[in-house]
Length: 383
Image 1 (cartoon, rainbow, N blue to C red):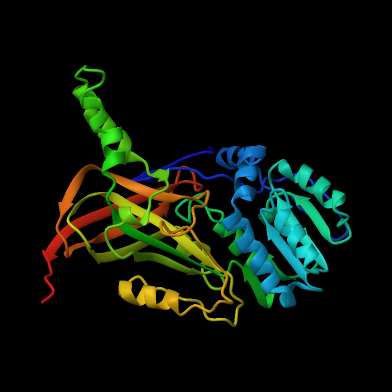
Image 2 (cartoon, one colour):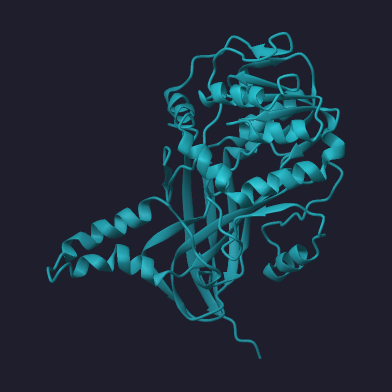
């Protein structure tokens, strides 16, 4: 589905684009699209892909995702009621409708793909044209006549960062959000951990050693190359994860910058919980929906794994968190797996450490280049 590419150890696309430049829909006196720069080819393809209904169907049917946003909107209703909201990449407009029903005075629903046409019809069908203004265009090209109190966006891609939509949200924040305004989601954390998945490896690589009694081992090197050169989007379980997770990156949407997004490097160090082959690394994320004055559960990359678990347990029942972790209910994001060409055998309590760099592709900023280094250290024995 969708454009796919993350590179190096790189890969894939998700299910949803945003923002092409076109004419404004709705209350042209309140907002519109200014003179837009010509779209790059990669952006044109990206936005076009979000014109397909199947992408939006998959996202809306993901109840973990959609319920989390609805819960967050109702939890923060006091910040939304009577206020002005900006929905960046509104798609079908479902989040805009949620905000309008929560009492928003005005919702600017910005969408660059052609699905904006249907979003406008949905707004009309739900008798919300006096509250929701659908604008067909890129957020970077939009002209609003007022600042907004709230920005909401479902910007997360596979491995959190794929699609590079976050910079558009940050652009909207810097240009349109009032001081002290609300951003939903407010914080995001990308986790990583070594994984073991012998069934997947055997099915993709070892399969070629004996195919209907025919020796096709000549294809094994190609299979290893194919398996490892691009990340795989799939669902794994907690039983596949062989260490406590490390934090790759924590993002505070109130302060994070587009410049920081261009390249992120993190060192990691974990300890294997079992004797098993490492087939690669899994990545997953969670986002929080906190107000600007509320503290997030900031997980620095050097935080001890047990401290991460303790912080999660200290969360209030009032906290709204959308998680894509292997141990939680599956979502359409699943997990992103970077497979090695060959498995690496590790012992229980053995140190696994290295670094990961994720950077935007120069050829296509919607894609990511991923470079992962991994070494094995000593085995620690608990006395």
